[in-house]
Image 1: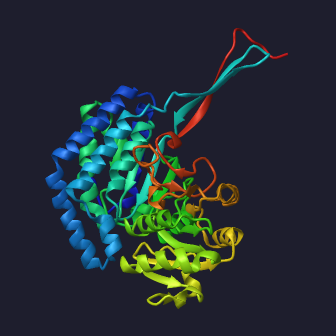
Image 2: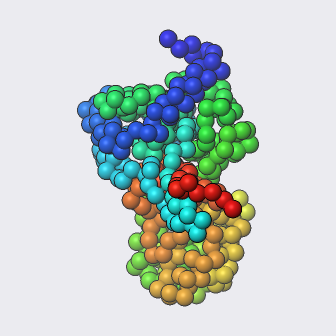
Length: 421
């Protein structure tokens, strides 16, 4: 029985077991990993009533804690959402195994044959907040890529994450893979997070998945390398050549489908030439849908808007609120994004190919979209089955982080008694 009060000892034990499991996983067959994930999906669906009961406890805890409606939506599980988690597990299971893939190979004049081959990173630590589905997504992607994982979910999702984790362990057991390959930190104590950030002997990389406060803490205190997943300060630029019907559909979906996810639109930039046409239409439609529009001085002329302040530019609301601003041209929109963006996801609405090319060439965010909802900023929608997060940094991985992005590589060099002159 683990002592939950001795956090350093608890985390050291978890780390040592993860490191041992990673050694086994590094050479596990693709068939065994596929079997584990398929069995986990079956186990999760079979346990859905227990998962929903666990989630009900978390929802009560979240309401008592005063979570916003958007955060409660992130926390909430339903039978449909559990089905989506199961579908994600099966989609990851069906993907090609990235481990051992030959990324490139070539021959040298010296007689050497060289291959660059994908390998696991080792042990991944994932620190996340209220979304219990991250337990399944992160566990599955790490397993698929041959990595052991230590999961530290948010206090709000403690019971839900524990129930989902049990299904993942059942899958590992069914495939005769080490159960320590996917471990969930069994305590809400925040000291466990601090411990993970300094476990350089057992964790190879940390992935923080949450708000600015969590990511900032991790980046400040971590001695382990970090895949940064910063805020989703998502911009949509409505160009003067935008199609009004497409603009209305994309903007409403980008903002209102689910306001609490990182791909939700947070700022609308409208070309001055279409203020009285498309601009009026989309802003009124947003307000009709229950969205509070925080408008700049020009757009405040539209009845029902709220005056924006300086704090509204570069802000992630994760709620039914959007900032709106008029820009003189595409370059002004690009400048605004450069100043206030988080390099997550941006969208341009236009029928002008030259404007698309300019936007794509000059905006430096991980995901750029044209005439498509920013809610598609998701690894599952990119064909990755799921994602462990969306990396907004530029080193190693960027954008949705799937199984392939959770690998490194090594060089395999073959000679025939070859010596260097």
